[in-house]
Length: 58
Image (tube, rainbow, N blue to C red; front, side, top):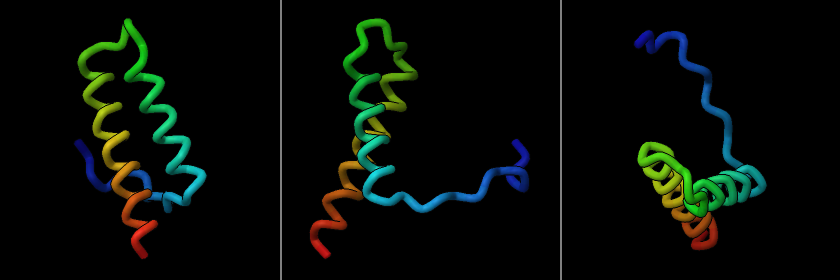
C-alpha cells in the first residue's frame, strides 16, 4: 500500500456524520450483507455515534 497516495481527510460536519450513520445502519439492516460489510458498517456506525455524542458534550 502506497501511503503517499492516500486522499486528504475531509472534515466530518453534522450532515456528513448523519449520512455516515444512516448508510451504516442501512448496511446493517440488509439481510444479504457480507461479514466484511457488516464489520465496516458497525465500525462506521460506532465512530459516527461517538463523534456525535462528543460534539453534544462540548
